Amino acid sequence: MKISRFISASIIFCMMLLIFHDVAISAPIQAEAVVEQTSVYVGEPFILTIRVSGTDQAQQPDLSGIKGASVKYQGGSQNNSSSITIINGKMTQDVRRGYVFSFQLTPLKTGTLTIPGLAVSAGSQTVRTRPLQVNVLAPEKTDDVRLRLSVSQNQCYVGEPVTLTVTWYLQQDVRSVNFTIPLLEETDWFYFIDPETQQQPDKKYYRIPLNDGEVIGRQGQETLDGTSFSTIAFSKILIPKKSGRFAIEPATVACEILTGFRNTNRRNSFFSSRQGIYQKVVAPSNSLALNILEVPDQGKPAGFAGHVGTYKISAEAAPTEVSVGDPITLTLKLSGPDYLEHVILPPLANQTPLAEDFKIPSERATAETRGNAKIFTQTIRALNADIKQIPPIELPYFDTKTGTYKIAKTEPIPLTVKETRMITAMDAEGRTLPAINGSKVQTWEKGIAYNYEDLSALKDQRTGFALMGSPVWLSALVLPPVLYLLTLMTTVIIRRKQADPQAVFAKKAFSDLCRDLKKVRTAGSGQLTPDIILDALRHYLGARLGISSRAIVFNDVQILLKRRAVSEEVLDDLKSIFDECEAGRYAGTGETADPVALSEKTLKTAKKLEKYFK
Image 1 (tube, rainbow, N blue to C red):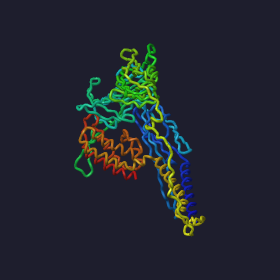
Image 2: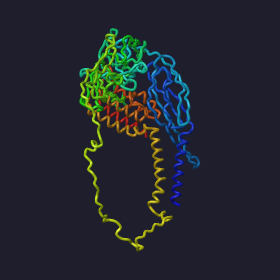
Image 3: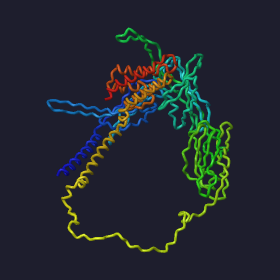
Image 4: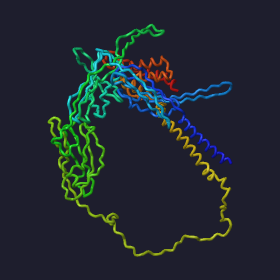
């Protein structure tokens, strides 16, 4: 009876879990879209927040319908709350579930930016937010900050690399920097590659947030329109995918520029300090045009596969003494162009002389880039013993310098191929089987030697209810439902963790911050020390708030922290850390804060923030 009751209770409990899970998903949901400001400049990023109520397992909405702005997902987090009220001895519990998505939008052109109704789904339900409109203004020009775009050439061929250089001109210290380059969103037109930067000891370099990554900028000094500026320049490599005249729209840089100082007196202190006064500005660049030509049809070789530039190809093979059918590793090395990341090798089966004498499988090892060369590896097998060499491998290419087609070839590789002898069963065994003449039958000395007749040899084998008291039988009966229950509970826990994977990172965010800040003491007072502190702080806030940690600025987290009722004092401390890390990074006229003191200040501020995340 006890066992049956236990089984019944387990089944009922499992059904309640499943019913509760389904009810949580099927509860009515609502969604609301909110922007932090309704009027912005071109290139000035702002935050779009989508608040979902009624569920904490909503799916990330699709924002591809927003035209005229770049969109970057900042992350999401659960927004659950519960309260208990007792009135006249009756207790009522109110549980509210919600989820918040955060996106950074950057307008690419002036006018009205329309954010359409966005679909938010949870389970079988789908709701839409109300449409929003944001007024996008032309940026105000300033003489202290300027931006210029340039390309290495105004005309190129499809597949020919072009270098885009972005130069930022400065006369004052800046902070809270955000670049917007519409060209980098045109993935249908171009491949984009980050060039390798050879850093020189006497130059100063900066890591600049750009899109979802970073670029390395080099500091310099230039004169523009008769005025001397400090400059920071970085580059991107463009490789056109198709032909046509492409208009490169202006890029923008939004930042806060230092306009002056004010004296601040601290409470209960006889000393005063100077605090910088910053003004937000958005500087646009010039526009460009790139004429992309298709390679000519006249004189195009039959095996041309789109290789543009000046190419060289060489080959190696091992082993060079084989039998028919033995594998041969053929290694091909391509070199010539500066950027080979997107360069492929046409199938070797298209090489007619090679395909006639060798078996060439369709599989090929993954190519590897080594320095200024790309290595391709292919296994081939000789088909007959008359083969004396691996014939030259040809690679047609279009030489942009001469405007003509050329063919790069490998040198033939001498090869010795032997006939393959038929292998018999005796060869595989490796010995001659002995003749079997017979064997002598021996007497089996073991067996049943005695017969037992007394009742002591008998064993009670009665079955029935006597087995109910057996521990093995009880385990076999009880263990399956218990295992099922444990499996079900584990599944529910795993699903909840998968619904909010950020919670795992959030729990260890503070310990990771403490570990990262230790690097400051070992890094010394080098120029990248503020970046170490800033990166550690970004990763901490990103994990705690459930947003992307790349290129986080104070404005990205301010709204999310206010939603958690973080005090103004803590927000001011956090803002000052961002300011101290960024002040003086560009233009170099400000003083850099002591890295050890700044790391301690960051740790103290993080400790204050921790109580708001519990």
